[in-house]
Image (cartoon, rainbow, N blue to C red):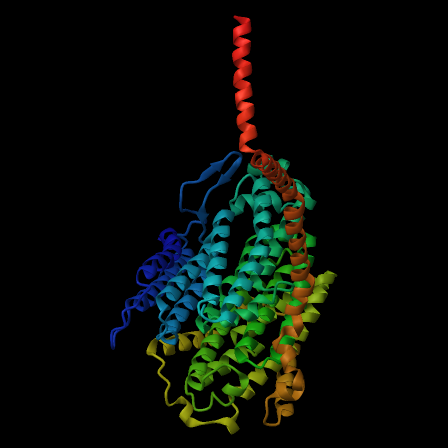
Length: 634
């Protein structure tokens, strides 16, 4: 049964996407759900059910580790099995993705109820979800690449959904170009790993490349090990893969596209930022962790980028004038945190801490985005000044936002606390072994803990400001039961998820460094109280940052830096290529054409210069000469 569930969990949202496009133009019937909305929400709910069946099958022991999808392909010496997998990790993350997908579809049906392109949006969300589920369930690098590229294409469509706005079009193109550039590395890395292993199956790739310098190869992979070069090429392949992951996840230096993605509708932001595209790289690297653990160069690249990103993004989040962009920068910081665990976790501990933070982040970040989106409809925008005091009087969004921000800040026993402490514990374990990059991540992580607590407290003080409360702001709240259900489910999972994960850890003696956990909790509480005291009834960011808020909104001028360091040289090179093409390469062709034209004009002028009489005389003379020659020769 779990084998069938593994296929259905990918096929259901894909089929919903195809059928959704057929219903892309909704019929608005008074008091009835339009077909596109019913299809999108119903299919996503069914996907959740199938994902649960798969998890039950895994725990009952009936699951197989490899599930065939299509006939295997043989491309010369390369074998492409095209298989899915069913493991506890894949089944759990599939449920997380399916739940977030359902919540987003339920919310989008209300949030975009007046959008004439809602059907297209819902179908794209379904296809996006199918792409992420394919990445999660894949046991084959080719299927992973297919899901990876589907998400990239869909992200372009979702971010640019409001294509009548120039800013949305620009943000969509930026996301597409930046992620496509990084994906070149991802594709090349996949090619190197597959060719070296002679197969695209994860199991074969791991058995071939995970052993250091080709030693310890499995008997079934001796030939592949002999063909695969040792450390240098392995590091090159993993560096290329890490570059692709950094681009898709929005890590420095590819980070600028992710905050601009807020130009898309809030449901798209919740989907992209919670459990799908930006977190997909974490799961891919977790699947290849044994190979990554043997490639120090790739782990250093990942550690440096994530350490810089988590601190830099948290600083920017603190000073944002728009709370939706605050959540966007918090996503950058939190994704950096989950990736950093994979960069520094000791080989014997594995990638569990990073995957756990992926699971945790999906719930509380989706909750925060949906709560902000719901609130923005009632107050008329997402700017901090507009949303000030908006939570007051809101019986459901207020506790949901409170739980989400506490989990983001890492307050126990919420799920955000559990996963964050696992990441810090992984960094501490690496640091205790003398690994320099682990120290870098550990220090950056503790700094990020302080900054995260600061911007979470700032967001709460702005949203819950009693001095700006107006009861009539919520009188027009039209949120449907589906929306309320989605927010409640995500809030419950944010609370209960932490307890569920924490309880077995306590029973097993735990993997959390409790001294470090106490330190981080004290940092969170102390920072929150300090920010609250400093606020004095106003927006803490205004008091701390003052007139420099605009610089925070601009990301400290990264766009201008891109123009100076990337766009300007590229455009200059393009102009040089055009000049060489037109003035050098084409010069020979144009020269031959000009020469031929000049010769033709010369002949034409010479012909026109002759007099008709002279021409006739020469004709007569020639005829006479021919006649005389004929008589003489006769």
